[in-house]
Length: 210
Image (cartoon, rainbow, N blue to C red; front, side):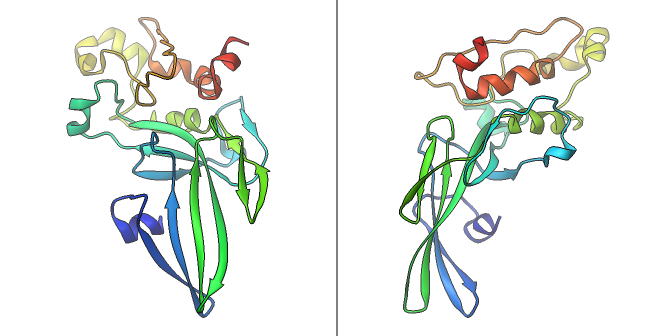
């Protein structure tokens, strides 16, 4: 992303200048304080998806996946961090302000769609687009990575090779304001078994129980 190329580290109070059609935009960004991410990942187009289930809502904005990457240092303080990192379905909007001295203001807002159902753009409130299945789709893609994925049968036959994957993993940081749901897979299986259930878990407990 341009923001990452310019700022190197994502910060909520920084601004960058973007040239556009003979003028410039002053671009700032904002997102919920609880949301951790290093990058915003594009959602896989529907026609190329592996998931049979799409959990989404129509509206304004661009659905993305917020990814807080795995590192060995982070794992020391985040014991539930998976090798895919922390992942969250988000929606981004871009709101433009008035022009002043050849420069316009623009604000990139990253919304946690599970907590925000609408957003104000150009003075009007609109429902936000959402793609709650985007995280599961990303996990399916990452499963091809030899450092992230694992074989259920392979783990059963040669368990000593997968001892480093024992334990509980979380898609997001634990929160005292959310109810943890623990998925347990069988001996000849793997966490990816629950990828369809992750879609409902991303929406909320009420959707999961239904």
